Amino acid sequence: MMLIHATAIVDPRAQLDSTVEVGPYSIIGPNVRIGARTVVGPHVVIEGHTTIGEDNKFFQFSSIGAAPQDKKWSGEPTRLEVGDRNTVREFCTFNLGTVQDVGVTRLGNDNWISAYVHLAHDCQVGSNTIFSNNAQLAGHVEVGDWAILSGYAGVHQFCKIGAHAFIGMYTSLTQDVPPFVLVSGNPAGARGVNIEGLKRRGFTRAQIDGIRAAYKHLYRSGLTLDEAKTALDAQALAMPDAADAIGTMRTFLDSASRGIVR
Image 1 (cartoon, rainbow, N blue to C red):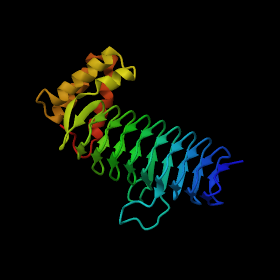
Image 2: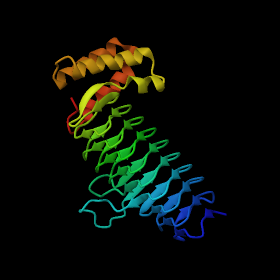
Image 3: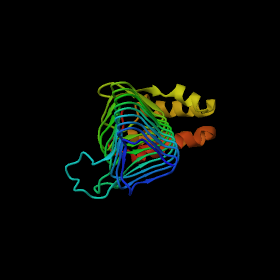
Image 4: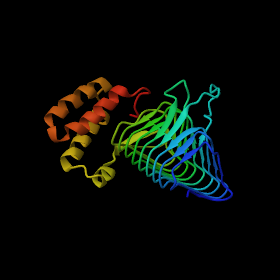
């Protein structure tokens, strides 16, 4: 028997695994699917074409799968997809996608989403990220795996944040952040490599040295961006133990659409 509180309202067309828990006064809409062992706390609204995986925990007063805050949205059946083992704290808002983009907002697996976080329409968030209280993403933002956004960080629409990047508290971000880079300030500026995070995730000394060398090419050498890309290509050949990490940064530079924080 599903563990649904008597005061909760669950549309009979919703698809909930039998192990899903739904707390008091929560509302689950007709186009929602929720996987095994997910816990929906009290006073949570989950609506829209929303698919949620297994072992998630939604705390009270969150709004999940509501219409995008985009005046162009006209009721199209766009989607929200949430993976597995995510913790979503109080008062979070995750919106559906829009047909002007991929039509789906995504949150991967094993993410820690603190209170008052906003994921706007068409955001693509990877896995193992940490969003501190009040971190806010505008529409169409991409966030790579293991990235950390500190409290009150705000990200402009269409920005990209690379894997393992660290965004400091109160940072106003209007350009892309390459992988492994630590940025902070308003306007945002590059402050170094997220070395502590890389150590915690098991990066080797050779990999970290390669990332630091790549950072120096990009930020400390006085090279133009195109010259820095060429330097990274040569560095990957010269440091084979760090070639994958350097390649991750190099590939990101080619995909950056708003220019990088520099």
